[in-house]
Amino acid sequence: MTSETANVATKPAEDNRRSLIPDGKMGTLGRDLSLEKRSQILDVLFFESDRRKPYLFRFVSLMVFSSSIAALGLMNDSTAVVIGAMLVAPLMTPIMAFAAALVQTWTKRIIESFAIVTGGALLGIAMGWLWTQFVPRVGPDSPVPSEVLARTAPNLADLGIAILAGAAGAYVTVRSEAGSALPGVGIAVALVPPLASIGITLAADRNDLARGALLLFLTNFAAISLAAGVTFAVAGFVPPRERLRQRAFGLGAAVVFVLAMAVPLASNTATKLQRSNFTVDAARAVQAWDSELRLEEVQIDPKQTPKRVTIIVTGEELSGDPEELAATLAETRGERIEMELIFVPQVSVIAEP
Image (cartoon, rainbow, N blue to C red; front, side, top):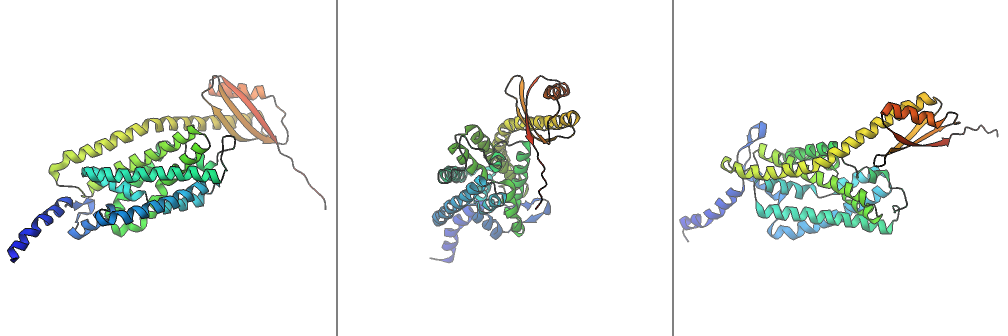
């Protein structure tokens, strides 16, 4: 074969490779990526051909480890253990791959990346449920650990965190020299603990809490995908300008998904603010009613009419009339309430040897 024939034979492969690797400025830094650099980024995000099976084996193994660590940490109310689970979790890579494929409208890679994320999510839920069977720390009649509860009522702040983490994750992916920040991104967005929380609450027959944890995971997934896609586009990791419509379609789909998640998040945020304001008013009312008492907790059930409020106070003795406290609180709030007051005596004893 002549050298001219060899060049012709290799040209289609080179053209095909170049069509998959966009060029352009890398964001505000104005740096061009070399062909080698772009190839490295694609290799980090997509594991294809003979790299697929080893990658999936590693992914499944790390999901089992991370979700198991998260489940045990959640049930033991250990923040440090939950943080460790976030560092082990491998979900950020396929989500970054999904965002990159979405913004470049690579249909096959979109489906493959989404399938990996979905499989990992189901595995995380299953491990949370399984560990609850072996370590029955949570049940229908037992209190739910605070670490689990913290992941069952997401709000707009969680959406903001996920958006920033998604943008940071995409930036770190493009800028490998900033790779030291990747563990921090994984900790900030917390992808696996909500999945383990779903499994734990399902095993405890607390479907209402499971729905909240599922909402948190879906919020993280949607917001990360959107923010990462935008960051990839701004950074220049996209096809030429004539394909702007296709990129806009992918990002538009992500925007719709995020907005759909924002509706229940806004509702949760409003409820959280209402509880916070009510707690402040209750603390002031208790202080005005009996300055010797200390407010421990305020529990609100807004679904009941009138609104049911449980106030837990502690002190040496209860001397005032609870009806006066209820009347003060109702007047302050401007609404009718049904109050239950729980007094926990505080006893101080001096013992001689």
